[in-house]
Image 1 (cartoon, rainbow, N blue to C red):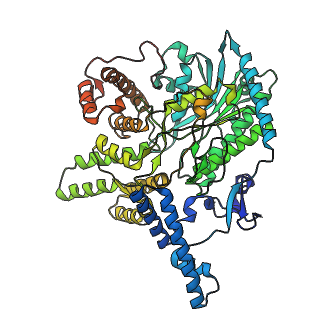
Image 2 (spheres, rainbow, N blue to C red; image 1 turned 45 degrees about the horizontal axis):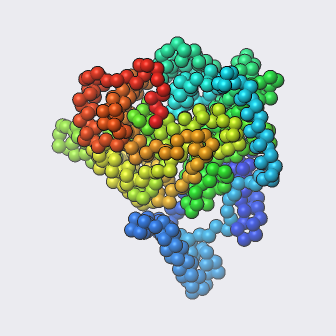
Image 3 (cartoon, rainbow, N blue to C red; image 1 turned 45 degrees about the vertical axis):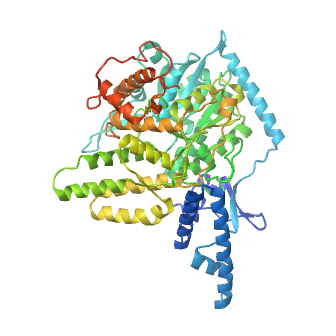
Length: 632
């Protein structure tokens, strides 16, 4: 099935369920089917050489002036001249359609339509009345499960084996208000590496019991909080058995739906099933808990993304609304997460489900140490690629020809699409989960969309400079449009001729995934509800320092993704955290603020980075069972 064949999509998957195409001149809805790919930015770009060059020139204007609006104004004037020229040429050659000339010569095409999300049928007064009622109901329900002034919260968690889900488990285990965490996990088939035959199937309980020590949850009272049940978010009723369902109805106070696909390059249908179908199943399940007689259910927490707003550029993406982005979406992940948010809001307003929507930006390792419990996705992927390429370059040996080839391949990996001015919104996982846990206890969060994002962002230029300082490699930022349309295709052909298909695939995938996030004109996400509603500290994490710790962690703890065993990563991260806390106390400042040379000197005095064993005694921050070491 391809996204072009819209008739082949099941009716529930079609974009028309959420989006309508509107005539710019008459403002009437156009009944044409909407292909999913037409909702992505690259369907409206890069189709003409002149268009590519225009975007390149805009990037240069931004670099020279630092003024994105000035670049847009200049390009608007250039396009206007191009259209006037097209009309003159059309008259000269007898062409009745100037638009055809404009598109052929200059790549200029005017859309006669725009997209918008279908309008809410309820009035603002009706919505406000519903939300006030839901908040009051949540407050009463939370009060009913409070003993001696302390809430007794029992959570059903989906996505517990994922990056954010693991941090939720850690912080919940150390929160006195949370009495129980029921984690939904699918059985896992273990296959023979050679024959691919299933040799063993791990039950949810077995998977959960193996996960707890990896999260350093060693104490009996910590482990006693957890229960693991079988299920699958893509199945009706979450695939939960009747017996488990009946028990959950009488016990669970909150559902945290954290399961989702974070593959930015997945096709539309796959993204839809993971993000929209999964969300609908979780919402419907939560409604059965809320409606059960005598149920203690308080609220459903949907973990989404601040990038549901897509490529907004002229104004901040607001927390209190979702509109179709004027510059479309980067990928189907963003698009389907936006559709899931619309379904979530609909469920709340029409079905009366008590809901909080929490929308993180790009989640990275914790702010203190960069620990990520083995995650290698999103920002970790290019950092690991740069690190491995740099190691290869430094360790090249053998014949001169082999060394030259290795050097060339490594340097190719250092080309990355990114405008120096592009701002990337990274938020450490501990801040994100602190917000999620806080939302469990605050009825006033019902009905709110809350961005768990940063108000201090890092630019592509800062990322390039930090990578040079921390990894010892010089990454060359390539203008994203030229890289996508010219450089990358040539690189892929060259690498395939050199029988380097894997590197070609990696570079292609990284370009596809990150190219859209490293262009100038990135969206700015409004923040404030994280402080105003959830009560999080007003000072948000220092993104530059957090990214620096990500680089240090990936280099020394994970060896740029080569260390894959989760038990070994857990051991290393525990020791790494001890080292970081010890160094933090000795320098009396965050370790991310310590200069690279001083950090490396302290590291070689404290840890053997080959065996990852301590060289001297370190303070163990977990020894006394204190607060979460991943919280700032």
